[in-house]
Length: 368
Image 1 (cartoon, helix red, strand yellow):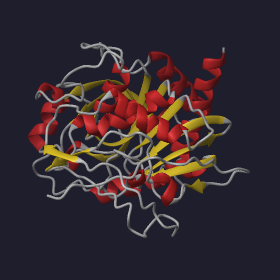
Image 2: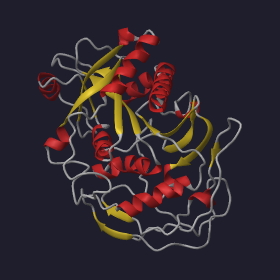
Image 3: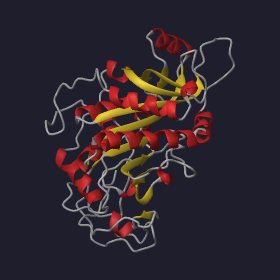
Image 4: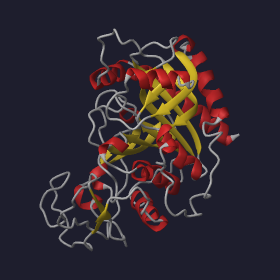
């Protein structure tokens, strides 16, 4: 395998004005000041920066100076991103935007498309395609566009992940959750995460919203946790408590928003379980999860919330029920990703208003 390269020593740029969006140009985005060599994992997704090429996001010629080559090492579940590396990524972003968000949002499957999505509702926005952010993974799943957007949701400054990374794509869990630590060092105090999930609870219908009050971390039961490996106390303690991972105060605000929007009939509060994927669950597995008290199941979110809590961030998450999990051996129904995307698109207006109102309540609560 050849070594990938990344350019360093960048210049700054400002965000858009007058409600317009600005996407950073390739020459600016392919630089990072005083960066450590990134690590490319054999057997996991990677990207290659070629600073000597003439291609860029806006047709500008890329810089000719190249940074140090990546070191290549065997894939490992253990986090090899140092505090200093995460700090350099955060500084890379802060040098290029004037917005200083306190709320970070992760848009799940079907909720981050190119039309009508939450990120497109941001004003005075600046967007960073993931492939232009040093050390960031690149999503490979349909329905995950792959941009980090800074802007205003209403009058509240936020940063929004338009698409996330999954364990089943080949990334270790710490890499999936790495952007949460970037958010922390950017200055974010509250994480709001959404996902698409299969409904197990008989009372749930496709299109319902489930506020997550707790989770069952099946990946963690199997010995796979985003906090595995050496711990850096600058992020958080070696053994963080997760029993209050989903903030009760923000959950209360979310239920108030549901009442204000008159959507109590489609809003629930329940337990979410994460599985590895990418295959959907068997009937026996779904029945087991139901017996354990799980209301909805998906392939994300838990490791992001664990990482956020480790960093001392306030966390909130909800699931859009995009399909009913099959529990009958006589059924010929099969879950599929297309229905996930379709339901996400159908619920975009409701979810956009739901998150916008919740963000406003959180900001008002912070100011009190």
